Length: 330
Image (cartoon, rainbow, N blue to C red; front, side, top):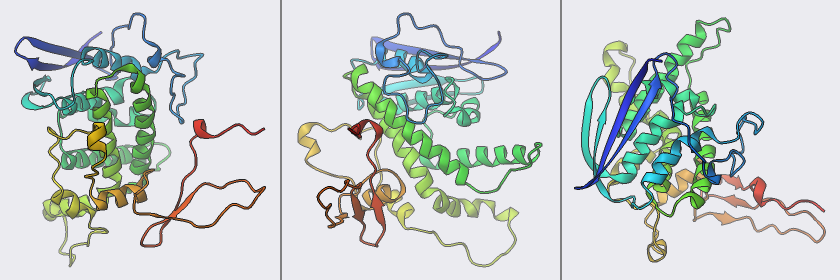
């Protein structure tokens, strides 16, 4: 079987080098992974299984993504997410070398593994794995995913169904499902390792899965100027829908030094900006801290409804308990 190799060499110290050789099928671009001998319990399919997972234990005893993550988790078990490393990524087309934080390196490897591991919920991103760009930025990510999604719509419009559409609702749905997956993966990792390098890489990826749908339209308006040669002189430039993009750029995150898993002492100091709290609360399943709880009370004998919150602009949010938090009815 012919394969395409993508190699990550991570230099943790002068005398420690970890090499990961990801072999991909030349035609399908599925990951050709080595069989994991005696896989740990946290890789079993039913262990913190994603709420939207379509796989069954009859056909899959283990989570395909967890199995492929096992080697990374195991080999970085004694590291910290903020450890500065030198990474070299070798593909058929190029060689990339950079000094950066370990969590960014792990997140970049997971960007490659996610779409090609065999998980049906991440397979939509497989074209990005075929044209893997290590350590890509938020703007590069948005340019690549929107281009990928629109090309998929082009192919769909030429198919028998002819249902391709030039809109991004479907892409937003994909990222919402990725958030559900990241949440479940984070739960798996709680018992898999005490190191925060992989855990923070998942957090970093989930940050992008939240920010991409949030900033998508505004980012595209920013990029519109690059395409002026294609566009007629159609008057005023479209206005951004929110000011989140401007605030996101002003709030420059140094990812090499960002510690996403705080110590107990650091946890008491909340440095997340208010705009991001508000944005996360509106766009994703996050709760901003400056919300006002609905003062309505449950009458005796009535079933308690999910807590309702109201933002400063009148948006009402209701929190529905997760399945594992619901108590069985007597």
